[in-house]
Amino acid sequence: MAFIKINKQNFFHNLNQIALQTASSDKIAIVLKDNAYGHGLLLMAELAAEYGIKHAVVRNSTEAKDIETLFETILILGDVAKCHPKFYYALNTLEDIRRAEQGAQVELKVDTGMHRNGIGIDEIETALALIKKQGLKLVGLMTHYRSADVLSSECFWQKKQFESVQNKVEEAGYINVRVHSHNSAAILRTKTFSEDIVRVGIAAYGYNELTIPFDRMALKPVLSLHAKQVSTRAVKEGECIGYGADFCASEAMTVSTYDLGYGDGWLRGNADTPFMTAETLSILGRVSMDFISLACEKEEICMMDDAQDAARQL
Image (tube, rainbow, N blue to C red):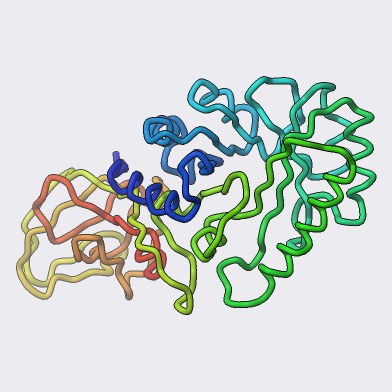
């Protein structure tokens, strides 16, 4: 079966680069939602904790419980708020506030312009009053930038919106509320960082989404995908390989099958424009459910070690 490898040195390199932007690794909240972007929740959580990261962000309580011993705080983006000494729950709607358990630690998610999740700015006073009425502990205030990776003024406009909400929270008497708006793209482009934490997702795993006009921080991909050899055979000139005989050998060649296919989630692809592996080997013919064919005799091959490069082909 195909498998992935995680490069610990690259992961730590990326965290080092981000820490230079925040002036302290203590301000990094590693985003581990959705199985750590497919890298493996527990493995990446353990590596982040080994590095010294104290804060994490996950999708739900199930993910949080799996890693609760590794971090000081865990922000849960989408679940009903419950009392837990380490868990902070994002509140996206007024109904989230009403459903929250009394005494739960919560963070108010503010919609400053992305219009996906979050409390509207015109609902802030209502939300703050409801948090107090429900007996919740407001520990955080957050928003999400919709265009931090684009050269425009939208990021600054949202920041101003967010600052106005911070003032309202302070005026309402809430203290010791941690503030965070920066995602990966925002922290990579910022020149000065003054918030309490930054939510780092895709950048930690090695990908810089900023376009060319921005300064490009050198990040290194953490994940690579590998497959093992299943069989090897000599193919004569004129013989065909795989379903539909889409590939016909123009000369005698040695071909191996490897244990990766569309059953593993790899795209079936187009035989007219074959995928080129990280080792510059073209897939020969169609991708099968469990196998691909390559002109190679190695026992193990690396299919991809950079998701952006792979995405350009798929």
